[in-house]
Image (cartoon, rainbow, N blue to C red; front, side, top):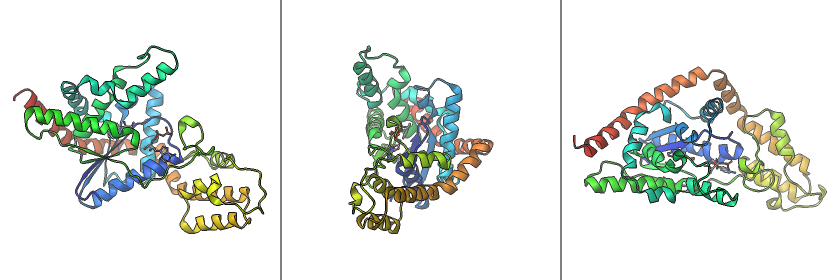
Length: 338
Ligand code: ADP
Ligand code: TRP
């Protein structure tokens, strides 16, 4: 898939990723990016730290989240020799491109953008003035995101459903500029939503999400992971009672991590009344710990040796900048008639 294509993955360093993020977003993004590179394409993978400052003002927290996210991608198998791995704020061309895009971006695009609208809706629900606490960074969020995408002549932007509109806005802005100058100054990107990635349920049965507080932590100590898994909702039916596995939350979560054989074993055990909730929670715990064992070691290593990661990010930025510089030059030449 995506032979010869340029793929760009951006991730905002906010929140601490959980098992759902890891299985549902981080690992699939790395796989997709590497696959493109193996098939003659390119993969840009960056940490959107300028996007994060709209909401987070504490430098210590920002730095910690940036480190965590960088190390999580490396732990999840991101290979900086394959993927161009960098930090948004290390590419000064991005804010320059953003400034040019502003001049061609209809204000109405920003009014209807999800990130902004969600913040307004929250204010309205809380009985506050519409724009309470909303800064220009949040309001113009999709324009900066458009610069991220357009700078590298990106073909494909893999995103979750919530980000589709932002990629469409990037494409529309590029179209407006190309039409104005009547030449293909900017490459038109497409979004890609991977429908095969399953939503991992949380310990209460709703989608695992940091906003629901129902997560299984990722690179935490075994004790914390165990605590979360043992608080997964169950009922009081005895072990001997045959159960339909599809009605059992532990089994649902197991699906996103177990091999087909392991899944079969748990399913049979439940159907035949041979496995109790304690058993299946231990099976899930083993699978989670087994899945993340190596990654957690790598994660801890990189967190403790972040200077190595800084070096990778610096090398990544050096690789990324020439493409952004070329795009910026194209734009400036056209816009200023040079
Ligand atoms: P959260 O819901 O915890 O706030 P985000 O909305 O920040 O997570 O999502 C970050 C990425 O992780 C998105 O690409 C999203 O699709 C993915 N993701 C989040 N929760 C899950 C889940 N429970 N299962 C699978 N993927 C998920
Ligand atoms: N807005 C994205 C998010 O919230 C992060 C992001 C910033 C991004 N720039 C991007 C994603 C460019 C893809 C491409 O998750």
